Length: 114
Image 1 (cartoon, rainbow, N blue to C red):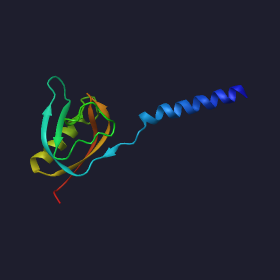
Image 2: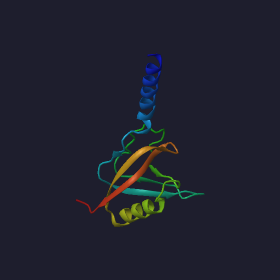
Image 3: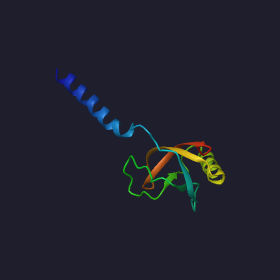
Image 4: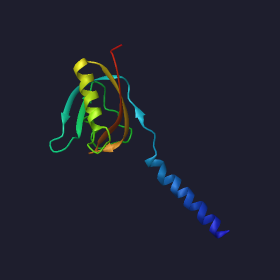
């Protein structure tokens, strides 16, 4: 009985610990990109939108979104954000976790203004 309780406790602890890392991503409302800044020594970039920064993870800084150079497809994200900015199109962002104390973007949707 004791090993059963220990195993059950281990499973519960694993589920509780994994709940924070498995948190669902959040989608922002549609908005427009207003500013883009690229990294000085790597391919990380940060950008702002017209809408207030969505911060579901309570990141320390809310002065824009970050796409780190370590994220696969970083170049594609930058190209998409530049295209949306240049064409004045709207974006909806998928946010998941914090990077450099800012909300990390892991997905971008683009549409023509409505």
